[in-house]
Length: 232
Image (cartoon, rainbow, N blue to C red; front, side, top):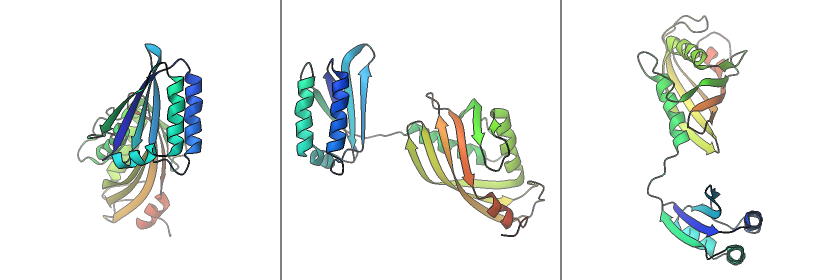
């Protein structure tokens, strides 16, 4: 079970505290067990800092606390604080990675049967799409709908999300696409063939959780080969 430690402190020496954290990261390289660390500053009190440190489990966190470097840094941190820091230990019982969920939701909407569902659930109205198959980038929801209509008119398909990696405001999704060629696509009449394709997309998110930009990579040449349009 993921374990999170919250360190609540007050200090007027934020720059010194940041340098101390940099020192801890450098000194514990290859030894620390923390997987994620965030420091936040209270908007109503600039001296109030909250650090959130994530570990794979409580036992792993205890291993980290026993490092001599951690002990030294802790004593230096106390010296920088106006009062003794307060610690809260939490076992994570629910962890919603919302950007990942929204990225997955896009694939569900794209493959939904019937009419194309509303896309404003996941996309910003000015969404910017980078697709190597298009000579120009696709910008705006109307253009995205036209692109999807072309694919949905040519195939009955589904996506399988294989992997997702989130970093900051971006989510990278590795996907597999399986389809039946049921209609005209890029000038190729329906063949009824079962085809498949794999690829990745990196989505950039706005603060409110809407997708504002996407970068695609997929094997369109391989798909054309499966349809008999080119020799592979």
